[in-house]
Amino acid sequence: MKKSFQLIFLLVLVMLFSTCKKAAKNITNQDFFPSVLVDFYINLDLPLYADLNFPNGYVYERNYGYKTRGVIVYNTGYTGPDQYVAFDRSCPYNVDSSCSVVSVDSSTLYYRCGQYTGVGGRFVPCCNSKFVASNGGQMEGPANRPLRQYYVSILGRQLHITNTLQ
Image (cartoon, rainbow, N blue to C red; front, side):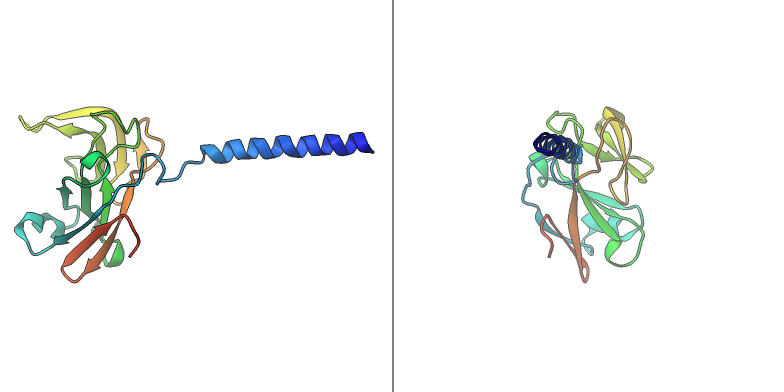
């Protein structure tokens, strides 16, 4: 009786450890780099932000996000609270690499890991990961998680982008 109890106890421990190990691999959208303060407003009436008034329009808001690489604010074309989304420009794959910056693809339908050069607008890839523009979900490439998303509140003709739920 005592040996069977010990065997069952050992089996339960093994199962618990294997479950914990699996849970540790289940990475969430928010854990691939430290949380950073993101809190800014966009006035949709300003010419600088005119592209956001159209579906698939976007802007890069510089000096925010992880390593101040910037935040992409994107008009999904939907109506209501899901019309605008915001994502950190840091690619979740090899996030500390200097080239690991996400840019909107020329089609404006997805994001790519890499940057457009100033000369001729040639795209220089980094890890070749692609992400869906409307939700930041990973499409292809070595990145195994979506982009870090920020909250967007619509306040009349202003957008409030922050990393805390308002």
